[in-house]
Length: 437
Image (tube, rainbow, N blue to C red):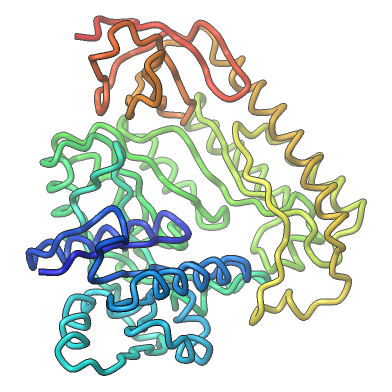
């Protein structure tokens, strides 16, 4: 029996895949440990969105090798898949696989221990690749179950390496999702968050769409909420919205990836929509979901972004009125078209634009919180992080806190209605609108 320690970098999809690999080891009666100190096996699940991300992965790998000279170390994930030649030269890792063949991870560890021969399994993606049917029903540290239902991307945005790390779009079979949702509900989770590399493309090759996946989860006994992770705006159709609007379980929060509110920058990024088309989509969504919130990602400092382009993007963000905005600076990524573009923006200008966009985002968030005053909303409570408050999230992803009168009682994984009495810059304070126990 091995003691297996996992180190995970990157997005919710990566974290889901880690949970799936943990399940594979558990099925063979191996022990998952929370510290690497006594581990026999270390699995490092990597991210490669940015070059600095690569550096963090490699630093963690070398640290593990130094502290655990006799452990079996496996490197997996997006970094070795996207940069296979570089990854093969990382001799601190005994096993190197990419974003394919994770279902083989236990066997690969067994083989290395038996033969003590370095294993490198880095297969290129092809257009015929099928979805790797990884599933997981236990998410020990989360109230919500993040479930990956889609992999790959066909978009090739000029700043992004992910199509090379994940291959083309492919989808989890619906019957497999239904079985997974049933097991998740049986294990006590009430909310499923549907996730993917390009979630809005779910089901295209299966003659399905995202509504089919949402309906399958919503129809599962015990699942009271279905939430969608990030969506590409150009794939959100009116038919999809009509079907989603018929699901009372659907959380009315839409994370629509924007990246820029300037058409010239969007075209340079190879995004497939204009700012006006994006704004029209938010209006159509609001017509179906009047109480919804919009969250997004905004990049500043993309190559060639002028002061006027930035001002246009900033004004557009304010016009939409997001409840949350993740603002980040453009980071050069080897292997992408944007890395070769002229007019790279100096870091000082990127930083200034980041601060201005972040300030606008904070203002919008505070304004959105004020709009929640007086509302009664159902809250799924999570782990208490202090003795003073229970905290959880409303369907629109507003963070809600209520006073914790009895420190010995937890509301974790329970849904109660809360009346919002006070707004803060990043959350709302409320009181129970129904008996708690």
